[in-house]
Image (cartoon, rainbow, N blue to C red; front, side):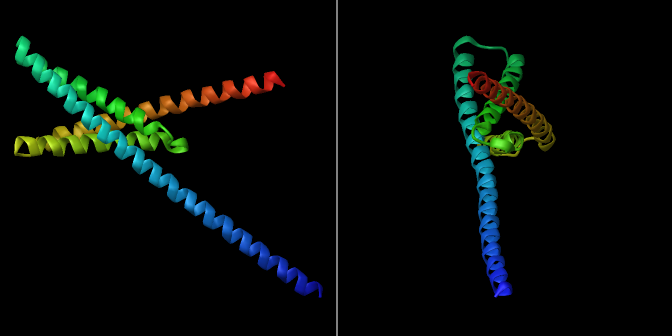
Length: 167
């Protein structure tokens, strides 16, 4: 009787542990999906931002005749701002994976923009420059992810200290 009862408890415990493991794995899958979704969303919004900025730049060049030496500098500024925007968008709702999500969105933005603008030109651009841009974007994405993570940690600490002060 004692042995049978113990055996039943073990079976119930095994079922409970299996249920927890299944739930934990589904949360891990959800976390991966969130990172990918945030990364793609950030990259696409960055692409849209870049296209709008380049159209505005084209109108300004046509109206005011900006010298060609300044155009490459303006393009780099637009690209860096778009990378920062990608990282900030990807950080929303990323939780513990903020840094990874920001880096992925920034890198994906560079790859997508390289492919899109290569299609528009009718030929592939310089792959070495794309790799340099990719490295720059990932570093900026990681930096933005760290900043967002640190700022959210400070916000959490302030909220926790405010709660303890109320008590």
